[in-house]
Amino acid sequence: MNAKTVSINCVNCAGPLNPKGGHKVKVLICDYCGAELDPHKDYALLTQLDIPHKSGATIALGTQGQYRDIAFTVIGYIVYEDTRYKEKWTDYQLYSSTHGYIWLSVEKGHITVSRRTRKSVEPYDHSRLSISTSIRYDDRQELQHFDKYQQRIISVGGELTWRAKRGDTVTSTTAIPVSSDQIIGLSSEYGKTEIEFYENIYPDQKQIREDFDLKKIEKPRGVHPLQPYKKGRLDFLKEHAFMFLMINIVLAFLFPAIWTGKTIVSSTVEGSQLSQGYRSEPFEIKDANKALKLNLRNHHLNNSWESYTITLVPVSDQKQSPGYLGINLSYYEGYDDGYWSEGSRSEDKTFRIDEVGLYALDIKLEESGSTRNNPDKGLEYSLQQGSSRSIWFFAMALFFFFALILGSRGAREFESKRWDNSSLYDDDD
Amino acid sequence: MSCGSHALYQDKGLMLMGEQSVVAETPSLLKVNQSVSIMGAIFQVYGRVCLTYNDGGWDEWYIQDNNAKGFWLSVDEGDYILQSTDKVELASDFTIGLTLGREVKQNNTTWIVTECDTATVCAIQGQLPEEIHIDESFDYWHLSGKGSELLTVEQKGNDTQGFMGQWIDPFEIETI
Image (cartoon, rainbow over all chains, first blue to last red; front, top):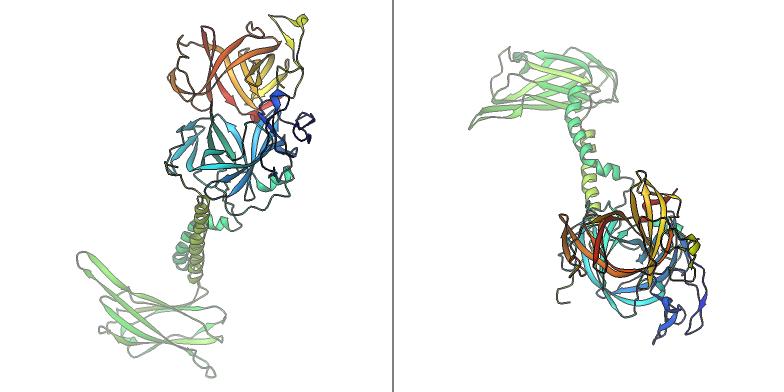
């Protein structure tokens, strides 16, 4: 058994009433005429409503449901209006004979559950706190002061553990989690004999709707201050974007150095041969689908430059040359407030061919910044196929860079919306 | 259930210690002569005292842990307080000026007065660690400390005594 089953009739309008709350219920409001009855004096009339009563409850009184596997019954409700924004919400009071009273609040389709808490709260008085002031709850949870506001009672009905009167205003403060991955907040109300704190929880919305069969409640609009940031399918990528970005940048530089592919031809050309033109030994290119990488390297180049023309020459007469490549080597170094260098002694060119077959390389030094007639100053060249290309790693790095930017922006925008309605009254209000 | 309701009736034949009464069974996580798990620890329920305050009432359950150490578990429609039966020494004038919201130093802890009222015993059931009489009244104060710690101060005439305890989440109490 969860709630008592007593039937009475309103002493004002004779409407049937079924109180289901406990002895802490202070008032029973007839949902037909709005009369206030005193449950501790045989439901005697406390106050008669002087305006037409209009129920504001979407959830019917007597509705039963489970919260954390405990049966609760909806026994009353209070419709509030924020005196600043004129936004309305409804707090439903629920009762369990073993677990007492909880509140189920419905605002813009968001459902939250509040329970009275006696755990420690520091600082204790929130009435004059600045926005975002840190509040420590239960000696472990970090909250931030969110708001201090006045709420006007628009409509009341059913059984309530305090005598809420239409038109009265209540001053409340709220605190929300520092991070949107927590769902516990805090609110405080100042009573005549007690300072009351309530632990507010943003439950799984689908689950709570199912548990109380809340089909009439509208879908949630906007972001609730206690709403946890819901991770999407791409959030794993967003969360690890920085790591993936770094990995791809490292691989972009590392992989080509490790995975050089298959060398088709490589040799060293004496310096004296280069100005007249050098032709390599014939070699066979067997695969036209993979890119070819030509590398020129001059270990002895120093404070000078060299400009080469390299032509891939078909050895068989019927073919035409795929074309020529221009490669410039330039390397300078010196001391000027410390050692410096610029340029490179090695350059790569990547290209493709249309036809397989026998080819040779014609390498000619077109121009240089110094005389090149020393046989020792050899030029190394190599032609490789199947080597890895950094561009894919750079492309992936770019992708993760944007994922990092967009991912953090989404979380930032959500966090900003959580704080949208946070503002404080002036002390004079 | 309100202890002052017609559901209660006196039965002097059950008196074992002072006056006792039989209390009608209502939905409760505790029952006399049964065991209960509180925050994972097992307790045996021995007795129950029903009290009234203002327009309501609450139950004080006398329970013992596995080491036969006694505790009071106060239950008031979902509000649960577990208190040791060991009394805290308080100055005779401790309650003077003890108003709501006031901070008090006791045992190197700062306590804040969060509740004060008068209670009256209306029914007794089972075995209790001390003599308690129906209709006796006392003033009480709840002082909240660090975490969920609670110091309850009771005053009967000139006799002032305190009990250390803590609020218990009802979702952490299970019947066995």
